Amino acid sequence: MAPGIPAAMERPHFIGIGGAGMSGIAKILAQRGAEVAGSDAKESGTAEALRALGATVHIGHAAGHLADDASCVVVSSAIRADNPELLRAAELSVPVVHRSDALASLMGGLRAIAVAGTHGKTTTTSMLAVALTELNLDPSYAIGGDLAGPGTNAAHGEGAIFVAEADESDRSFQKYDPEVAIVLNVELDHHANYASMDEIYESFEAFTGKIVPGGTLVIAADQEGAVELTERVRARPSLNIVTYGESETADVRVHKVTPRGLTSEVTVVLNGKYLTFTVSVPGRHYALNAVAALAAGVALGIPAHNLASALGKYTGVKRRLQLKGEAAGVQVIDSYAHHPTEMTADLEAMRGAASEARLLAVFQPHLFSRTQELGTEMGQALALADASVVLDIYPAREDPIPGITSELIIDAARAAGADVTAVHDKAEAAGTIAGMAKPGDLVLTMGAGDVTELGPQILDHLSS
Image (cartoon, rainbow, N blue to C red; front, side, top):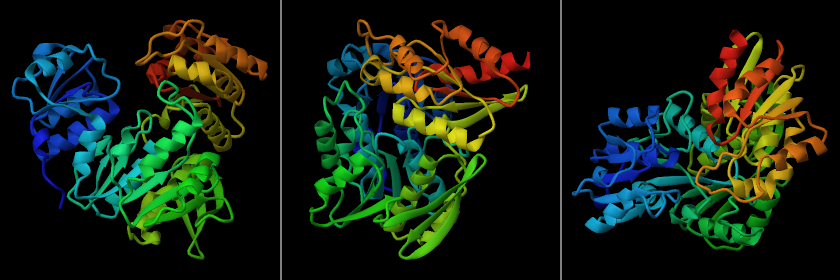
C-alpha cells in the first residue's frame, strides 16, 4: 500500500542522523530499501539501530563522509552553515533537503495524521502509532521519541496511514498536507524563531491551511491559544473542526479523569454516548492527549470503541514520565519537560500518582533563549516539588547570552518558596539528590538535554 522511495531519496546522506527527527526518516527510508548514509557527533544506540537496518553511519563530521553519488543531503535547522559535509555538498552540487521536506515526501499518497502543538506531540503521536498498530492497520509513523514497547521512533508500515509529529519550532510543519491535523495547544516557545504570539498564530494558521480539502482539524477546546486558533480558522470552507476537552461545548467531551496510581481511567462523551478507557500513564494532560488521539482516529473512520480499547495498549514513550528504576525505596522517573507548562503538568501528575510521597526534582534548563524568556515561570513550577536541584543551562544549538544563567530560575523558585539547591557540576548532581532522598520518595529528572543520563547514576548512589 505504501509508496516507494522518492527519486531524490534513493541515496540520502543525513547530517546529524542520530537526532530524534532525522533518525526516524532515515529508518523509514532504509526499511523502504534506500541506501541510507549519514553522520552524527557520537556513537549511540540509534546509530547501531540504523546500522542494523543497513545504513552507513559515520561518527564525527568530515567532508569525506559524503559519498560522491549521494542523491541528496538531509539537514535539520540545527545544522550550521559551516558543517564540512554541507560545504562538500555544495562543491558536488548535491541537493540539500530539509528534514521536513524529506518527511513530507514520505507521506505522499498516504492518509496522513500530523500532530502539532507546543507540548504533547510525541506522546499523542505515539499513542496513535501504538493504537493503529494494535488494530492491525500497520501504519507508518515518525515520532520525536522512542516508544517504550517497540523501542523505536519510526517505522515503515504497509498500511494506508502515516502518523507524524509536526514540529512548529522552525515552521517546518507547514510543509505537510495532512488529512487530519491535531493541535494540542498553542503557546509561545522557541523564542529564537518567534517574536510574539501573533507570529505563532500565523504559523499555526499556515499549518492548518495545508489540511486537505474535506479534512479534519482536531483541536483542544480548553487551552486559550487553541481556542483563539479555532476562531481564526472556523470560517474556512472544506474544513471539519472537531474540538475535544473538558469544556461543555467540546465535540468530544472529557467527562471524568480518574487517577489509578501510575495510570488513569478516562470517560468521554462522544456522539451522545459514554466511553471509558484506560491510559497507562498518569496525569490529566496525558489523558487529554489520548482523547485527542481518539478523536483523530474517529475522523479517519475508525470505530471509537475499537480505538479506545487499543489506546489502552500504549505504555509510554522514553523520557515522558518514564520509570528508570527503584533503589532504597526511592523511585526515579525521567521527564522531557523543559517548558513551564510541561514542568507543571508532570510535577502535578506525579503528585496525583503518589500523593503521600515526597517529590524531589532535578531540573536542567534547556536553551539560553528559553531561560531568558521563561526562567521565572520555570522557577515557579519547581515550587511544586518538595525540593529540587537545578543544573546549569544545556545550550544545545545556542551560544551563551550574557547574564542568562540558571540563577534566574533559582531566584524565582526561592521567591516562590521552593527549596532549591544549585549544582554547577553535573557529575555531582546524582550524589546530591540521592543524599536528599529518603525511602518512599519520588525523584524526577527533568529537561530536554542530557539530564536523562542521571537516572541510572542516581539509582547507583541509592544502592551503594
